[in-house]
Length: 159
Image (cartoon, rainbow, N blue to C red; front, side, top):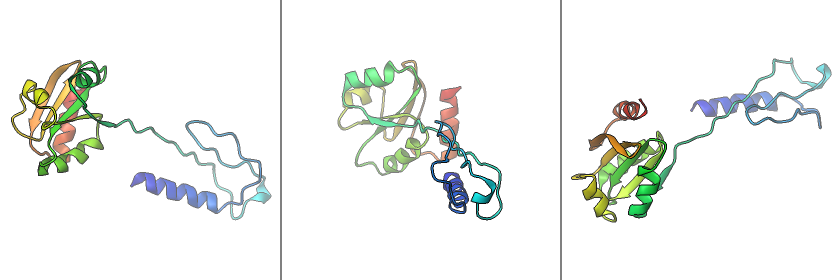
């Protein structure tokens, strides 16, 4: 929502100006500079230059293919990983999955396809979510949680 508002403000400020051809400054990777126009080249009153900063979204979700894939991408990961044990037929899993996906790097394990992993990590019900750091289970919960409870769970993983 905040990104949309920022984009609207930026586009409104650019559309209200009449840019000088070939007079834009070089773009950097972190900010977009204002046009370099003379005082007579602007319509309306000139305003201070505004910068638009961008950030890279780091949250990704990946499906575990098999045991060695789980070992490589989760257990041997240098960064903490959240593991979502789910099933296609599970209603609460379909609600919890999107909530987690927008917050954190997450590995998804379908318990019907990977029963060996579910047994190894003592998954008795779905959804079961594990927080793993350096190959060890740091925290675990079973069932659906609201966003505040998910944030508290993730703080334990990071801290």
